[in-house]
Image (cartoon, rainbow, N blue to C red; front, side, top):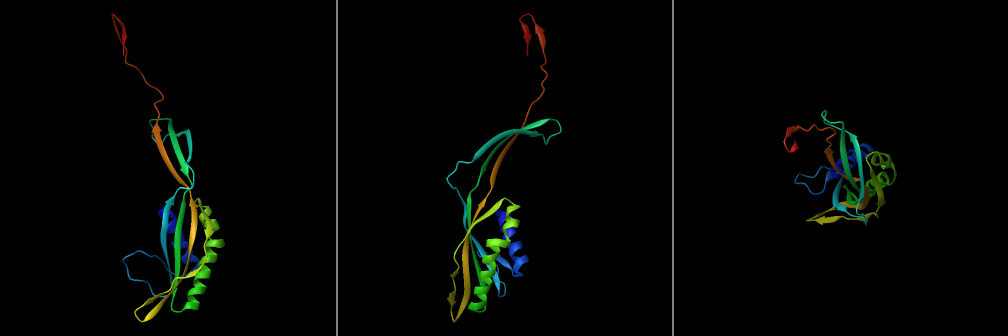
Length: 175
């Protein structure tokens, strides 16, 4: 699910803004300004639940069997990501951060809903600029809290018919 969230963010923000979206923690050279970056702050945090368990039968994936027994547990953990906008000047950087903030608040809802992801909160925007040697790298960012569906499934093929090989003996029937 984390891979899906990452792909949706990168693709969705790019389609909405036209700017490259990169993982903050990567060994590659930074793209030219302007661009966005993201970082997973919390990959998975339980939110006071032990999951919802379910058990049911489904048509088997194996043609030798009619049904499979499915045991499933479903969680809705919290995931927190941090986002930054980067630009040549602070005003452009602030505008880009606003554009991304708005995307998470509104335009992204349908895209995430189709993938069982919910934006819970979009945090306050803060200046995250840093001074590097003799110039500023302008950064403005915010954090986003998501809830995702985390499902774990155990599928077991069922034995629906079994023929015993019986052999008659003096004591009765041996199986």
